[in-house]
Image (cartoon, rainbow, N blue to C red):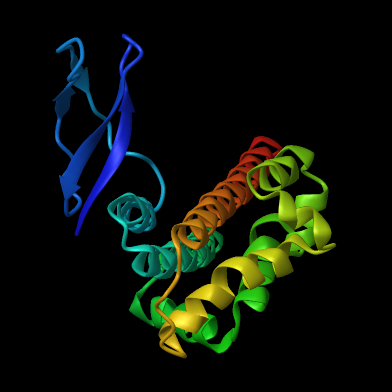
Length: 218
């Protein structure tokens, strides 16, 4: 897979670095000032980041239908990643996970049908709260959604807004063969996927803090 990610330079320039696979380059040169910038691979779900990066590239390239599909896929990838990650973390308190554990978690994940139950499952696993309740208690994240997508204020449930405006559009493509989407549709889906990814990262960070506090109390 080929994807790109933005790199800021101290001169004020931000430019894209292109990656193939998971092998990050060690450095990059700023096209404006020619400074060498040493690169560190990002933490977290690299595959989800790569898919979201490709969604952004497709928006810029004008393939808006593919951008919608990739935006939804990036979020689904992140949800599955976090579900597997925190099941592993919980089990590591007693023993190392094995192949049977991995297969059992994958089976459990497949049985959770629909995006709404999966969002709630991941949120409950990481924070102890369903998705909308977690978001209602984090005003910064909720405001980010309202700012990027003002129409989200019309629905009481942010979860339902994500499903309606991102995943239902994806379903129209892959389930019903609708492909005549416009740039505004793709840009909306990319914004929603980016915002939803940020929310999932915040949940991940909260779970990490809870784990640290638990170990510190021992």
